[in-house]
Length: 194
Image 1 (cartoon, rainbow, N blue to C red):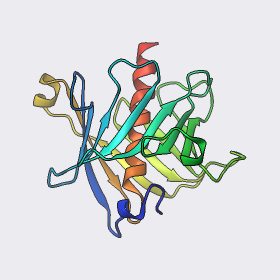
Image 2 (cartoon, rainbow, N blue to C red):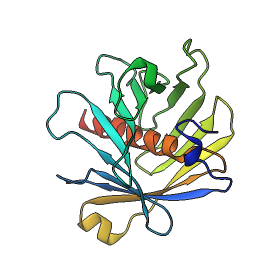
Image 3 (tube, one colour):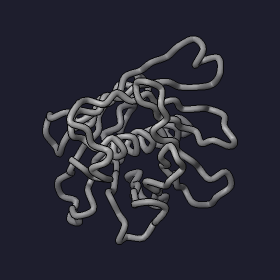
Image 4 (cartoon, rainbow, N blue to C red):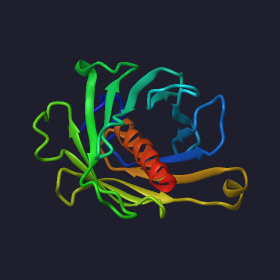
């Protein structure tokens, strides 16, 4: 199920390690690796910018996706575009909260670009961000396409990093799943600041 690119799909489960750095200045606040520790993606946030966007880069710093939050939405609406674009012709998907009022366990709906009516979601995300226990489902079904698991160590707490892993099921676009995790993290940080 290629959403970003068939290049990011594998016929077997992919285990990703995700490290979120709490304090960073130069190298982005997320690092995503494979099970062998090889860097696959990183996420850059503009340091001083009025726009709320993040850029998902591959290991060679090529922009894969631009994630942009719509600040005037009541549903935490995000739009995700190919490369560094924010043009509607490059839209990959839109994500929003299932409802405006959600306590502790966000439920998010994902609508692919071709789903302009947005009546039925193409994917949905449920779980507890605090517990790092989230699941991505296909449509409104119970078919799991990815799961997130907590992976805290004493060292990660001391050096200001949050570690977790994500299992991406066979033939599911792992760049797409990583972009969902980045947005979910941002929504969680906003909720904890309110």
